[in-house]
Amino acid sequence: MTAINYLSEDGSGIYARWHVPDLVPPNRAVELLFVFESPHVDELRKGLPVVGTAGRSALRFLQPAQPKDRSLGRFVQQSHAAGDGRIAILNVSNVPMQEAAFVDVEAPDLGEDEWTLIEKVRRSRARSISSMRGAVTRAISEVLVDGLRNWLSGVATRSDGRVVAAGTFAQLMVAAAIPDLTPSPLHVPHPSFYQWNRMANQELPDLIDARDRFRGQPSTAQHFESIHGG
Image (cartoon, rainbow, N blue to C red; front, top):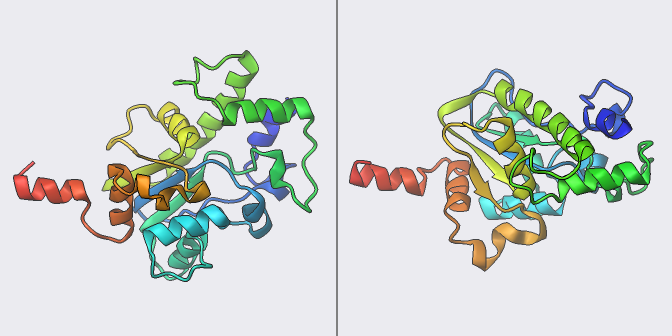
């Protein structure tokens, strides 16, 4: 099926022109591994993950002192170039999962039915892959899960490192890829629509923990344990 072939693209196949590579430092155990959904308009244009509005909003929350036009993806890319490999970024899918991502760019040869299936997977609120409705939907999901599992297994994390799954879709896929991931991943909202900066989300423990780790500070949980001997 074309949709499965498309979502299986590793950067060397017929859909390589739409493949946006992850940001993973070579030969380095990372401290913080962000997992997002898929590239969109800006990511496709620039060939980098998390460089659009959501990426700029995310960095504004994580490092308010950074220039407002700098994105999380660009920050991590520049950090890697400077020899700082503490942070990595993965996408569940390295090709866009939304037809709307192809603005002023030729789109891949997928039919409307295939985009509908991909969108169904992306928007699924199922608790597990097996509980998704439809054999084709589950097959598409398994392709994404298999790819993510390979990436997660290949990215070394420090013993105290954490995976940060951003958004419901990424959280579902990370759980399906490595159900017994230890330590358990941090669950945070997707940074789109300025969610990380909303007042209502400023007390979310996992989001605060991710921010502290991003800044190289002891997390709130670690600080509590150091005081109380946990």
